[in-house]
Image (tube, rainbow, N blue to C red; front, side, top):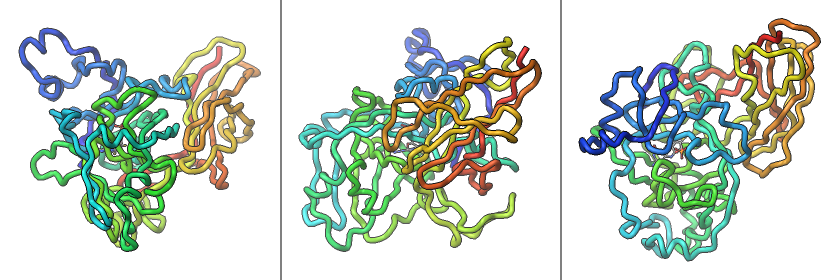
Length: 392
Ligand code: MTE
């Protein structure tokens, strides 16, 4: 399903007037370009292009220096084409299935419900996939398919309450308005009713205080906090309450994790898997960068750490390749589903080469492992992070 491209940064600039004048639609322009050329995507300056075919953009980790990720620096993950024409006046959200009172609402009707805000770290299940060994197929994400934003909109449970969920309703299915190319199955997934009626699960219409942009699901998307990004369906147009987990490509075989440890490189029996839901505990070093050559003196090691539905309890840093660990200071900004910024003030004793590592632990007692659990689709990579640097 995923389109792959080797890890490489392409600097994205604004659409050239010439291309627009020539009538080239941005996707055509992008897909037609030889790989080394500058690629132009409006408003997404400096992002890493991971797929030509559909828009898949990764944030350089150096961008993670604010608690809330600015929308133009927020990763984008599309399995297919974004809806090309989406007039908010025509948009409808239908609610049906195992409900007493099915209905379809306009955007104005949806927005009459009380809004609620959740600061959530959204991470693609495949973030870090390129770091699994042996390598696995799929979009070769580095570490930047993650970001944190304040999502706002009505609670999904308020919408469901209007419809009246029957006792037979056990899962809630979302369908997006993606343009499905050829034989690709549509992007439809479901979540269990317990998560759907959680007070923090939203039909988000806003991100960081502004209406969602098209890349992020305008005019409305599901926001399933603490869970893999795939749970949060963009361009949502249909909600259906169903009796069982939805059966379809994006529930199985996609987004499933083996029940037992798999011998690295082995195939997995699909019967022996479960859907990937909540995110792992994880930290990433955002500076200094791998390969940095630093002057002598103090070094501010810094980064981000998150834990899905759990809270980050601590982040520890090792500057000697993992023998000794010291606690980093966690930043003041926090919210239940949001990452923490962290810093570690380090004074190297002497010049030389160092391996600096970060390791997060959470309120569920989980700690980042030294090696991530290998699985054939490369989901939930969360090994201890490390950078190699030289101090003069
Ligand atoms: N929703 C639809 N309709 N189509 C998609 O391809 N991608 C999912 C999810 N919602 C997707 C979708 C995946 S895999 C992720 S990681 C998140 O959207 C990414 O959200 P973002 O692009 O706003 O960062």
